[in-house]
Length: 191
Image (cartoon, rainbow, N blue to C red):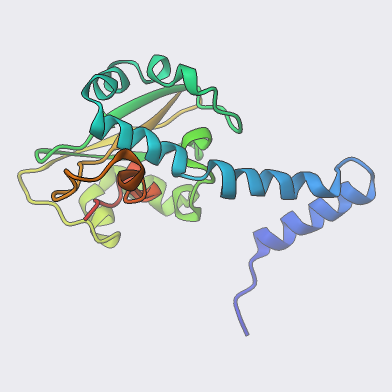
């Protein structure tokens, strides 16, 4: 028998109660989940990363003032607040966390992964980032500086991963398919 997910059971019970009381349209939750899984997801962020890799001017604008750089996109589905983009380089690896809760740029990354909200991740990545990154399969050389960025209600972060070698001939659409949500949080590198 599988492990009981008490949070899922509570959420389902709450949803059923709200529907029963007429406070929630039964399709509303499904529409929200569909929005973030199918229309938002991490593909928006991946598109921004691919564009930054192929357009140096956009990359510079994104790093200097991400809010202004993406203003024309008019993203629906989740507040970004102030978005700050930090760039991974051969010498610096960035990783994002929200130590107080789970602030996350939903509009560009979609639904946050379960582990992002876990208290163990939120506390350990600050204290021992290399150990946590290693658990995600990301091993960094000792001379690579690790920077941990703490999201908040006011500021959300997105990591601009390093462009994988051997992708010089790919267009932005093909590049976007290589980008993962975890690489934009900084817990993994792209291969």
